[in-house]
Image 1 (cartoon, helix red, strand yellow):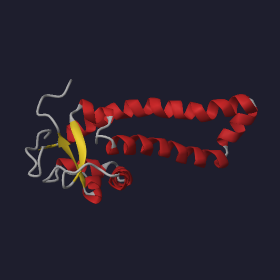
Image 2: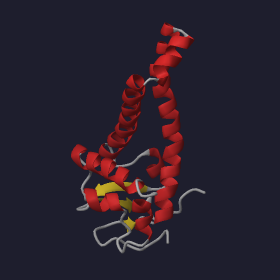
Image 3: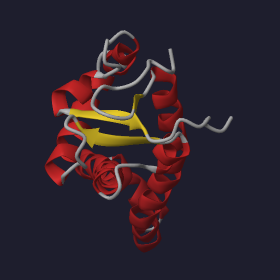
Length: 161
């Protein structure tokens, strides 16, 4: 299921397992990025206010919602930057895949943003939008179809592991 064959528009299609492996690599990287992004906000606040006042602030909705949106922005920034600057995150480079528009062109910022938010929809029903790539004739996930993008293999060599 990982090698669904050639893509008529150029490049080999990307199977579900290769897609998930790249996401797992990126998840490790993103965990570290979120840890650093969180520390940039919480350490100065905690040191400036003291433990009890900082704990009260961190528990309040007035802090949690903006902080949640900040974290979503960090994640979005990561993906948008890499998808518009070469079409690959570190995980995608490792697994030799690239995201391109349906016509094979590189992603513009609008394409990358649409793909990012459409991927959120793919996660909602238990990740069904991602699992769909295993049965889709073109190997596309829901967010690929919604955003007019696709993943292509850039090298026929074997991935590490």
